[in-house]
Image (cartoon, rainbow, N blue to C red; front, side, top):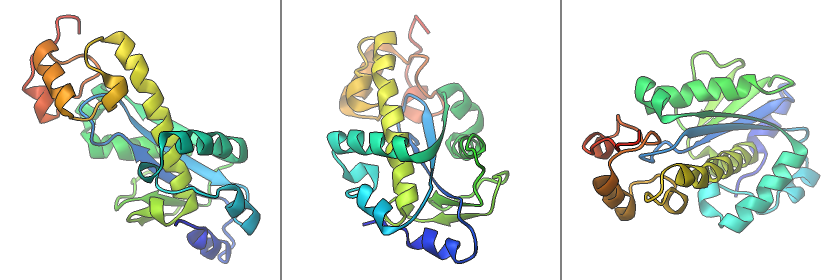
Length: 210
């Protein structure tokens, strides 16, 4: 389970404003990529207790994520950046994600003194010293919290996409390349919510109403 080990070590270096950063939506064929950053006001045992059950968002049920989302929002500084498919296609998904990280962290107030990022990559223009942590969402509570926020925000966008373009079932598969989604692509073509730089979408015809 994630804890505040990384955050506590940084506090020993007189860094108290520490944010965790994670993304949701790098793999889907449709919808935005969403980056969230979360900065708690303390990293003590009381805070750990309030975050009981917090883990990588992919390991939690939808109901548990929703409850943790409300808890995190109520007790932490949160920054969010969502980039649409058009920018993903222009930049490629890695560069779009790194850019979204920069924008999400910039939206935090106060500004962090250190940034913990899930994965291997650190944006070039990030506003503070940063550490990349592989599988960070299962190691750092700050990153795990960011994974919850990013996942919940992105998932909440999918029913809206569904209303824009009926027949794709975005609310069910969240834009991922499931059998249902691929069949819908063949039947309806690709909508404005799709990422045309992704191979299955590039092979599909464009929908008439895009």
